Image 1: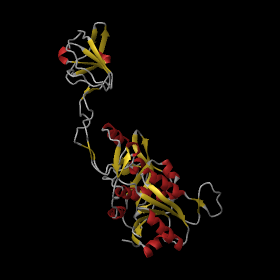
Image 2: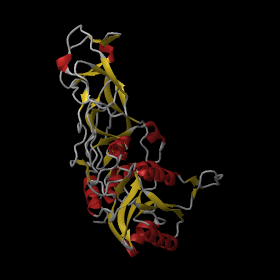
Image 3: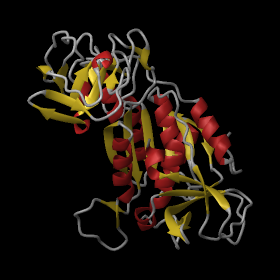
Image 4: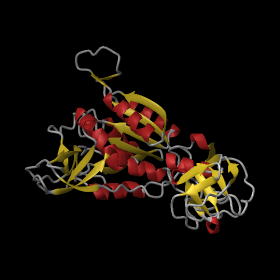
Amino acid sequence: MAGQHLTPVEDAVSHILAQATALAGSETVPLADSLGRVLAEDLLVPADVPPADNSAVDGYALRTEDFVANQPLPVSARVPAGQAPAAIKPGTAVRIFTGSEIPEGANAVVMQERADVSDAGVVIRADVSDGQNIRRRGQDLTRGDLALARGTRIRPQEMGLLASMGTARVPVRPRLKVAVLSTGDELVEPGVALKPGQIYNTNRFTLLGLLAETGCDVVLCETLRDNREATQATLKRAASEADLVITSGGVSVGEEDHVRAVLESSGELSLWRMAIKPGKPLAFGSFEGTPVLGLPGNPAAVLVTFLVVGIPYIRKRQGVTDYRVYGEQLPAAFSVDSASVRKEFVRARKEIHDQQVMVAAYPNQSSGMLSSACWADGLAVVPEHTAIIPGDIITYYSFAELLG
């Protein structure tokens, strides 16, 4: 699949995903440490949630047959949350609070705002119906049902659901171990004074942030100097320590682009050059059996290609069942005059124009301008061979959705 032609984005992503297999094995982690992890097995509901009928409001529990308009009901008991109540006495009401278990025999709760209390009892100033303001046992989860399926990525809401089931430890897939290799003699770390010809290593920190967002463990992070032997030696070490090697730079056509050359000569290069803008010189292959994703060197191109190609691949390796991303269809507030043979991912954001949500593009879409991504909140897609005028409907992906 490698060659001089440009592989369409969809074909490139399909090819790369076809090589992605989920990590084997599992581990259990405390519920508090499960955020972002992927479930390794189906989880069934061990007991009804809630475990008993309970009140949805602060108020008064009663039997509907005892209700008579404008007639007081004596208050026979008080049921704070967390205490097991006694059965309700016929002809009375019970003071109750949100989350308190419903006394046996009661079949309705009237909120306190609809009740007048006096020494004679409580007068209800509202209609009363069977089941009113009662959360039924098993209303949220029923014992034996599927709570969460294998391959679910755990978000805060899943953590809360697991807690409601009494789950203290969670079976999850192992974390993907990733090696991050930047390339270039010109790169120096932030905090060091630049000498002539040097630039700061932007891509390392972009990738470290993206990998943290996707729940990966970075096991090696180094800069490759522009030397073929050193590149091969570091790739060999990275391949032995990681489940995935990600490089930035070194995959284009220059004499000092050694990553692609090493993959071609000593590993496998199955894809090179994608019909995407920015990020054309993307490469994918393997070295000593470990997959290698070679990203371009320009900072904005690194971000875009990681979001478009890297994240779906990583999600599938993590065992996520649904790793697709669904964009929004919105009108463009920008124009693209000349159609390109490459699909363009424009750094963009949603704005209100004439009381309508539209997608605005950053004025300068250079692949070297990472400031455009800081201004943006997502990517707008300009299809191949397509010019855009304001008002045209385009696909827009928010960064939040792309990161999952």
